[in-house]
Length: 60
Image (cartoon, rainbow, N blue to C red; front, side, top):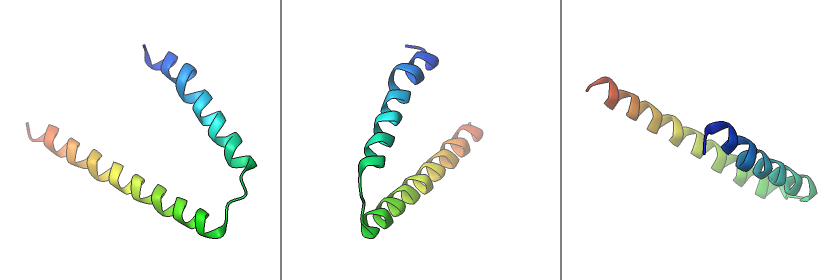
């Protein structure tokens, strides 16, 4: 499976379904805050791992 078919066959429908579910949901303020915290934590973790991988590859 190439990148374009992965995007078109998997990611686009998944994102569309997620947005549809989110549009129908009525989240509370606490749920929104929790989601924002999780999203921020995942973004930071992704950045840290990315920098670590770059450092390892650079020092080879």
